[in-house]
Length: 80
Image (tube, rainbow, N blue to C red; front, side):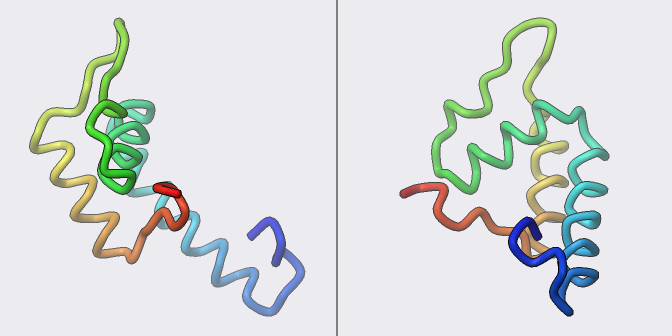
C-alpha cells in the first residue's frame, strides 16, 4: 500500500489491509500480532509475552490463524 497508494489497486489493497486488521483486532492485539509472527516466521519464541500481557489461548490462536489464512494473509520475507 505504501508504494501503491495512488495506483488503481489502492482501494483493493486497503480493503485487504482493513480485513486483516479486523481479524487481528478480534483478539488481544499485541499477543495476536506476536502469535502471527511466530506462526508465519516459524519461531514459537515470538509468542512469548511479558506481564501484564498473556499469550493467546490455543483456541484464540487457532481462530486467528485460521481466519488469517482464509483471508490469504502471508508475511513474505519474514524468514529471510
